[in-house]
View 1 (cartoon, helix red, strand yellow):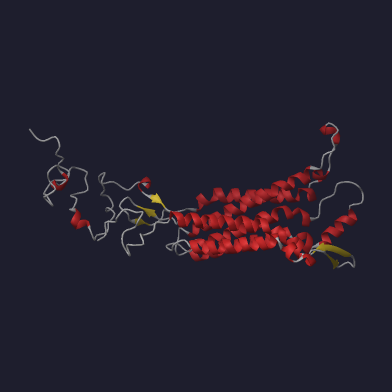
View 2 (cartoon, rainbow, N blue to C red):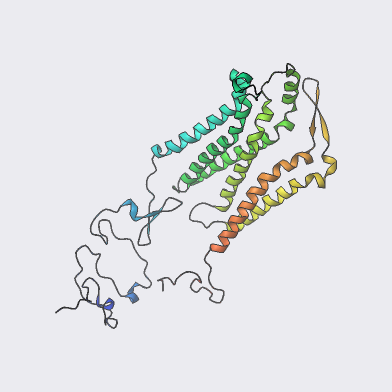
Length: 349
């Protein structure tokens, strides 16, 4: 009567009492991948992926679920090898690209409705129980910052993810990502300080707003709500370029710490600039092109507006770097070049 503990698909070394025998002649079962060599022959050899059409489940084509897609677009097979990333056709871009463009268009509409939609600046209190509310054109401005932030973030994400899928196109796509970050940074800077940079707009609005009726706000105030968020997004995109170099290179954790510390230091300086330079917090008289005059605050009084985006992004990058340091596998200090202290010993000799 044959033993019930014997499995003819495996060599003798894996059977009860077969530890002394290194190899055994055996006939593989149908659909198996062939004999498994002894452990001493596996050492010093890298695992290779099975040939197309032959695998542990029989001759069949590899399914998409048999691999795990990495961040840079490559796929790691079950045997440890890697294959070329799958195609990313243009039709897959259309969904997020259309959503991003729709959000940006919605932000422009919400920001400028008070200028070209007549009903945006009129209100009838009788329609609201006699309560005198502000025109809806003013309220719509609050929807512009999140729409601009979401739309720009989706565009930036598409560019960065596309750069991780193609080594040939990666330099050009990373440059495009950097150009977008610079453009958003300039737009955010102008939005935050437009009132001080363009006092003419406020002067013209004040002189024309004498009829007592709601009138469109000067554009310098309208763009101010979106400025801080766009500037913050630009700083975050710059952090991505700093800490994530081109693929097949390790993430720059130390560079992330330096970048985050620099932003946090700049934010702290901006926060306390009025106390460090109290004489630069007064008003400055500006001569307008039409011959009039306007006043604006000194640079030390405007500097605290930079504190929130600088500190928020700086501390976020520092937190990421500290978590990356804590979770990165390291070798034990007493074993120079020895096995990792947190990873199992590899099969390499």
